[in-house]
Image (cartoon, rainbow over the protein chains, first blue to last red):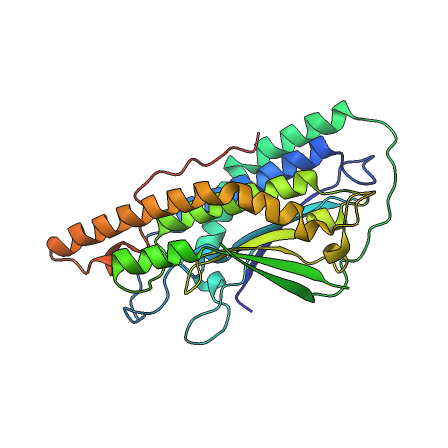
Length: 155
Length: 153
């Protein structure tokens, strides 16, 4: 598999139960910032072997993020499962800049670790400390099947 | 029991693109930025209004961008009961009320911004071609506008 999935977990001592809205908002804002950061950099690719009329920006639009804020350890997952137009296989983990053998997702992960995560975690800790105390414990539900009903809304 | 995908496709933008470009084409980066910004904002608003018990279904939201041949985005939720979630006292599933209403509220602005971005792309492609470049092929993956990258804290 050559998809990319990076998980940031948060598990401070004493944390249990569903995150409060203010705490979750920090993670939601962090996930938006990470996606925006990645998209700000995931541009200017060379398409050396791809035909002129083949799709472009396939991996750019495939970045997604999801949260798990129901019980510790809480997590923020950023992933990309873009499929090559010719092979149908995931390829993002192989992507690199011309002249640089480092996988580009690792370059961005390093930058995110320095530029975004420390601020997000500090903000999260502040919100967490504001609301120290007993919390209602909820049982983590399974998301169950991946089956989804499709609603078409042409506008 | 199922999650849901709400596909919001913008036929007027697709038609506009064909009119100004001459045929269907992929979206350029600046155009994708517009779509992504609105999709993220819409999902954020839906999450903020979503009723919460465990937060499992609220955490199960995500969006994907559609660029060819449909232009728009999909708001998805893969919690297997998400299709039936409703507010207490009102049995209307939120996928048919809150989700649609939130998308509808932003759609006019999204359409206007996307059309403006398409105009800019076409102009840049024409300029590139006039200078001997390959036109659209040379600029589809380039960003011309600086996007504001929000900080997490």
